Length: 152
Image (tube, rainbow, N blue to C red; front, side, top):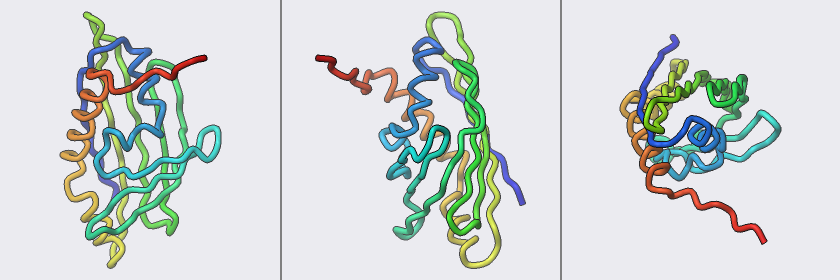
């Protein structure tokens, strides 16, 4: 069975800045509580490691399926065992007063059995987790926690 969760938030900053920050997936562990690491494995692929229930480590590979600059980022994932798949998109819209509306929709399928039970626990309240991640993203962006690289 496929489940869907959606959340949105308004973030201070122009759409180009917000889009570019989100497009740097490797920074997600700074504001996504359960994401331990994301490693870019190709131009549009990455490997994710997250913390699951009872200290369980969950890993999957992701493919970016859509990159519409300053508008939309889409993805698909499949874990290494082929037991859980996700897909989704993030939509960005410029608002007045240098603000950006960020809307995330995620679809996920969890199998039955013991593995499915463990994974379901990880996604026990994905709407709440997504809401928390978006609030953390807002703080991350608005408090200037991204430091620009120093160029010599």
